[in-house]
Image (tube, rainbow, N blue to C red):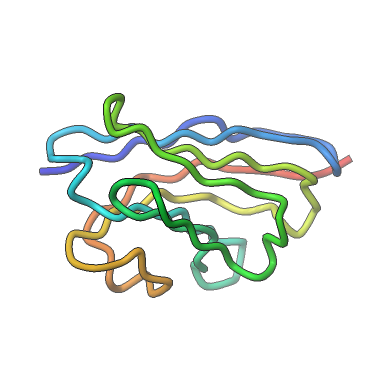
Length: 124
């Protein structure tokens, strides 16, 4: 059973930065496409960024607009999301997810593994 554990969330002022990390265990990390989703209070979980198995292809939601960067390390079994230029509307719980077949998809129902999430709050 694959387990994903996120870390790195917290409170940050508008314009600030955070580094979110997701550590995977219990599976073959390099076999999975990986992604970050987020869910704000009262809203549906939405795709933020995805990365292919070898890390050569990355995909971002339009609202990222060059502010976030996803990367992965298949030796350390981690996927990282760097958040820059944070805005109050980026406040959400951020989830790491893994996809066995195809991907990385922007559809949350196509992911097989999920972490518990890490909370990001952007406020002055």
